[in-house]
Image (cartoon, rainbow over all chains, first blue to last red; front, side, top):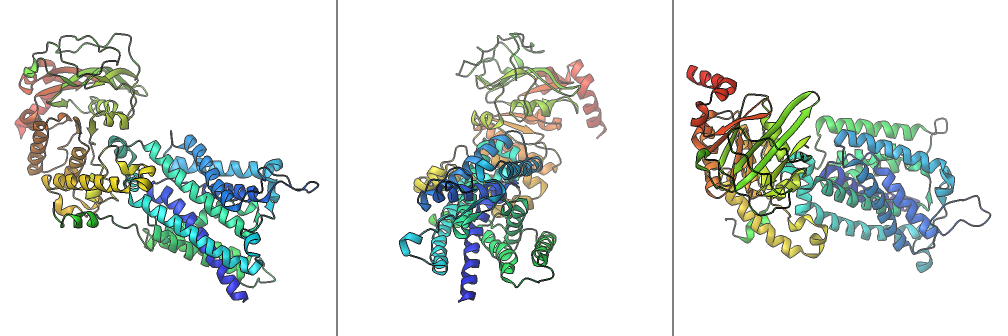
Length: 325
Length: 301
């Protein structure tokens, strides 16, 4: 039974990281936005979703945070996505007006560091480094779940969320909007010369990606039941980027494969390995080295990723006209 | 661009014309009494006055003023460093001018960003071909039409049929344009896989797909073989016959002479002269600043 429990935990992380990777993919893979602060958007979604369901801190407890409201978890989850969007809007207004690619990436890293320091040190807002604990389990009241059965139900719920997010993202990336985002990614000057408002399209990509980040973060906090600021730092962004690059940038299926290969197999799976008593931190460190080596290997030998961006054809539209115009 | 207080520089070759009414005017402006190239009374596709741009201490464009008659093919020529490409970048909104004003089909576009200028009918190409390399040739064209329904999130989820219909229309037109430019067989290739000449054609085809009223071509003949030069020249003439005005920066004077109705000569950031190529060959300042060297090189060939 324990193995099944582990397996379903890994399945959950596969679902959650797939959602996160699609969000990063629409920003980086489609619109070319190097958002090295991506984890901050995930964290905001997680925190807002968790706090809105948790309710206010108990009187006399040491906890101190805002937004506690006892909201239903579905409402809180969507609010988490929208809160990440709000952060995306703010970040977009700061960076997209003037900055491009590498400079934008540097500013995004700076923003994430500033946000992390602020959240960690300003205790009244998000309870500092202690974070949030005791986030209620979704469906617990409805199905009278225990710790094990919760995983099965929540996995099923996450699968539905993942399916809906996949459907929506596929619509976006296969649409003329997706095409225009890729034009912006390839050459902003050309896109502008073709009448595309690059700022607007980058903002759209930023908001969509942020929403996905917030929803993914919300799923994770409902699953884990706690929010700890130290779990949402720049190296986590690196893991999501590594997953996308290994799986295939610009390909939603590649993002799914990357979620399986990097965060699930190399980050979450080793957590279930027995700890080496003399070197308790060894396995996580080896993990990081392996992910780094994997990233280097992929960039060296297959920079397009395992599943490269797919060539867009218009066969279905052509077929409607008998293949000739 | 900031508007000079009613002190727009006068054109070297043309009688002065009062500045349009501060940008409020909409309808097409009509050129005043110039007799150059038989263009009297033609509507203006583009007019700029007192255009200025400096990079540090270098005045790349220094009070340039000229106009492009609607329906004409106009060349912008001059020695290297004359400010031609900078002028194109300023007028297309790619760069922000330090001063001067610009009108497109009678509508002031001073200070407009590139995407708005394009929306007003001006589409440009670049000095070095800039294909969207990771998009296919067909996608390069499909991305070009303005204000596509499918670029809105709302429409993607709530008006999919309307998007599909529009896509069908754009696809039909894109394939037609690709056929006209000889790129139909390459439609599913990535744009980065094309040869240099094909990339030139693709850039022109993509601009056509955006349905311009005024087309800016920045050295469209640079670095391509003579057969393709002729082909691109024919495309430009065909577009012009279809009602598209053209302003092209070009060093190939044979092409300029063959297809351009009117030529604007720039030197040191200023407009030196305007006229037909035949008139300019007899213009002493133009010969001294530009054509002398060019004609000598031509004679040597």
